[in-house]
Structure formats: structure tokens, C-alpha cells
Length: 183
Length: 183
DNA sequence: TTACAATGTTTATTATATTAAACGTACTGA
DNA sequence: TCAGTACGTTTAATATAATAAACATTGTAA
Image 1 (tube, rainbow over the protein chains, first blue to last red):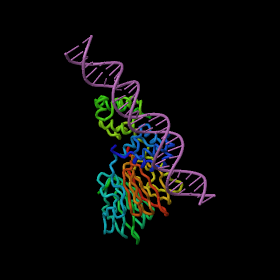
Image 2: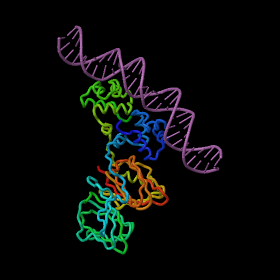
Image 3: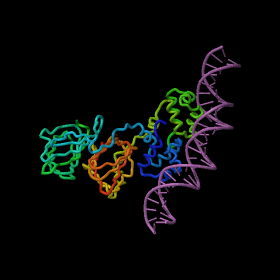
Image 4: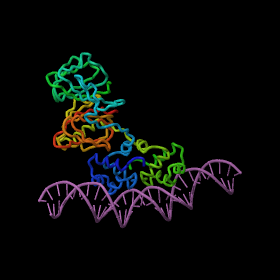
């Protein structure tokens, strides 16, 4: 075997918060069978593996498709987030460095008091949204304008001209997402 | 088994213009083994099936993908996820009202201490990411697991089974985004 | 026809997977 | 502290898969 069948089954089982005995009961096999499979001490018959996956439930196709999934970097520590506008009035921390081919761009944004994306109102394709965490953010989309506070959010077609501006005395913090990446 | 494994193997073998003996030789099994499998008179061990497919050659993922039925309604899987973890332990607010036709789904999520999605979801939505704002969130993606704190983030292919769990004493807060199902 | 080679199938034996039950550990509440 | 429970692991017995070899059929060439 060129992949760790046991480890994969164990990962999937634990992901579903099932004990070996609980899964065994649902699958109609014994807990010992699952234990031995997870330790790679046996190579299960397809009928057994099918029963076990039915108990989760997961299809054989999905189970084996997991090995074909290319693994990207998944977790990012705070200081690993790419600082895009560092030092300026507006700074961005981008979730994921290497965005090539990715379908989403997620940003943790900080606006200094009074910071403004400017009047240019960049137009990029697709859609965009975000949640305000701290401070007050004035959002202008087309002819609509509104000041958002913590917990407020926005969502719009980003082909419409738009603009962000931090108002008030304190810094403003936002998490936003847009698709596709516009950089 | 809810599908005809033997017939599928036979079809694949004949498609490649291989005799049972020729394939057996390449695979390192006996011709009898292949005959019995194709007649569904045995349920092959995974090690045997793997050897046989290697002789064709074809991956297990491809072999089982042949039976894969297109998963519709994956779009609603997220709602199911939230219902399961619901009852107050996990609350969320979706940015925007009607999700239909949108390119992005953005959620502001709050996990009570110990709250757990408890389910590994398989979705057709391509990618997913988020930023932790408060508390400690244990994120499991495939067989990778990590505890994230404020400012930390995650990003992954959401077809991989995944799970979120709030650890520690304080509530956990996250803003996440994912691309919609691809039909 | 005859002989031969290649095909898929079947069978007795051997190897292995699965079961049922026991085992060890850790956690929990009385 | 002591049961009681749930967990993963291990082991002897049993069920099943894999092998090696024989069997049956078909097609082809001498």
C-alpha cells in the first residue's frame, strides 16, 4: 500500500467523533476489526471496509479521493499572515501566502483612524463582503453610504464602485473575503 | 455491496485488453483470484484489489470514482452542520440574506466553550478559510490538527473532512468564508 | 483430424481476515 | 477509595480470501 489506510480511517472516524465501538455497532462489524484495520495489522476485505464506511457514513469514492487531494498549507499563525499594507494607514493580513489558483481571498484588515481607500473606488470582478470587528467603518457602495460598527457587515457585487473609510477616533478592524483574488 | 465490483473490474480489465492471466501476472496475484473477484464470489482484500489495479494501472480513487454519484444539495450541508452544533452552543450570523446565486458565503461564528461541530462535512464547495478573533479553536482538517488563537487563521480545500471545536474556558469567535457549491 | 495454446472456471490447500471475549487503561461519580 | 463505564488493544477460534493446480472451452495451425 502506498498510503496509510489505517491512519486515514482513524482520522475520518475521529473527525466524526465516533468511538471504535460506536462505529462498529453502526457498521455491523466488531470493534476489534476496526482496531486492527486502524493499526494496519490487516488489509480489510472490501465488504468490511464498505460496511465500516457506511457506518460513518462515507462513500468508498470519497474515502479514496482523500489520498488524491493535494495538501496545501492549512494553518497560519498570526505572524505568518502576509502583511500587505504594513506600516500605512491601512494594513492587511492575508490568509494564505500563495494565492495562485485559489478561489478565495480572505483579509484581516486594520484601518487607522481616518484611513480611506480613496476615491478611486477600485472595480474588480466578483463579489465581496466582510464583518466589522472594531471601530466605525464608513462603507460607500454605488450611491449607498452607511457607517458600520462592531458586528455589522456588508456584502456587494464588487463591480460596483466602492470605498472604505475608518471614522471616529479608534482604529477599525475588519475581516473580509472576496472571490476571486484581485491581486 | 451496493455496486457490482466484479463487473466493474471486468469492464476495466477488458477495456485495457488484458486477459485474467496477463493482469494477474502484472499484478502479482493468481488468475484464479481475478476470476473469483470478477464473479463476486469473494470480496477482495484491499491489498489484493490494490495490486490488481496497479497492474492495469488504475488508482483506487479512480476505480471508485467510477461509481461516484454527483452529490447534489451539498449547498445545504452547511445548514445541517450548524443545526447539529446548534442549540445555543454555536451561533452564527450569515452575511447577506439569500445565499442563492452568491459567490461567497461569509459567516460570523460564535462557539461556546467546548462547542464542537462534531461532524466532518464533505462538500463540493471548493475552498474555505477563516480568522480566529477570540478564544481557542481546535481545527481538524483531514489528519492535521491544530489549536488556533486570536489572529491565527486557516485555509483549506473544503472537500477534505474537517471539524471545529472551541477549546479552553472562553467563548470562541471566528469569521469564515467559503466559496459556494460548484454544480 | 490432431495437437497446441490461450482463455475463463473450479477445487483442495494455505494464508489471512473477522469474530467473540478477555485485557489494560483512563476517567467519573458515589 | 471503590465501583462502574467507556475506550482501544490483544488473542484463540472461526470464517473467508488467495493460492496452486487441475479442468473445460475455444480457436488455430499442421
